[in-house]
Length: 467
Image (cartoon, rainbow, N blue to C red; front, side, top):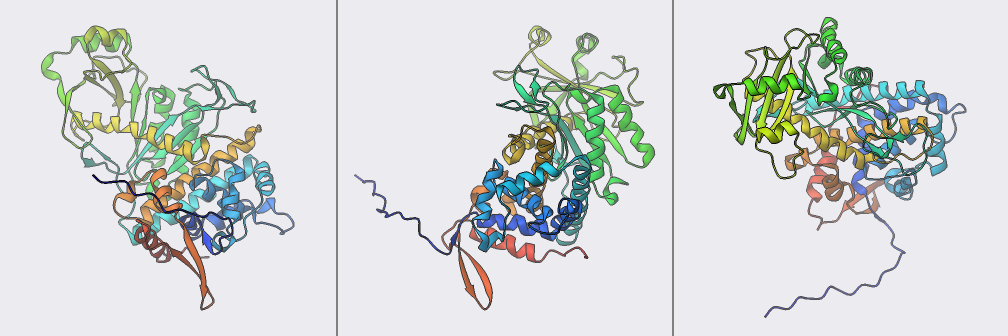
């Protein structure tokens, strides 16, 4: 019989020296410098430092973004960075950070967005020079051409009275932000903070978020690159799709794949489909999906008012346990989902168009991770401060995405923030000094020490923007 050994007995004290935690988060701060984000933020917020004294507002904003990427949930969590000056240098106090957020008005917010776009352009150039550029989005076991943007809204509960917080359609209370993510890398391109009672299918809000997202894409990619816009049925408003089509006149090659409600005309068309027009659906790895089929309804449903060339496609499958079914689904014994796309005939089989649209579900994971990177909790009762907080949360998501794209290899290139924090960002290290340099010594027994050290090496090798 084997006995379980007891753990070593410890004597705990709070007098350690030369030991730091969250050492891997220095990677994020240095990456902000390497992409020019810190400089761009400093230029954008220069007016908030009229006397040129105290902490630079741009540096404070970057520290807040690093703190959020590291897993912090409130402004007070800046203490993790502030109390380790050997690693992070001087970090602003909590009141100073509050004053910064309070000073960011609509004009400053617009400048922050422009600063993020400039840094993104540098990061993408660095990816092209040191890696293989921006990776392709994938669906159905194949690479998708160009860029894929996913737009979706989410509810954020507020547990206290906050400006413009309101009752939500799910009988909660809070905000209803609309967000856009780049599926290729997981970058958070744009976000619009809205009251909780904002409509899910408001075309004007979708247009605003899309335009902000496109402004984040570097010119070399925004013009001349195929850009697919995916949304659920909330993005199927005719005005929004007309705006998408109009962008082509400005040299932006957009196309769409958006959800569509299963209306009565759609139900009649589905019932009229002969069995031979249904084709097997695909899994995301390209294999056949069990008990799922795809068919085209174009020509059987009136699409008057939609852009020319719009197609309508339906998928049906056996419902999984717990699936929400309509009365029509219950009658048919199958779950039905419908979407619209303007991808022309001949540019991919029907099954591929359907599995490509279904990959939009990844945006739910992006939002879930984003809520754990800042915008799942808003710190102030003032709407303007919360809007600035949202922008810094999106910046934190970008820093994590650029870290995966520029600095990591293997499975960590697709790791969610939780895994990155556990394995890299929250690693402990020892500070030593020698030869007029500060050495950060990661524990030799840490399982991911080589991945973290290699990331710092890759960071040092990044080409820097001209100043």
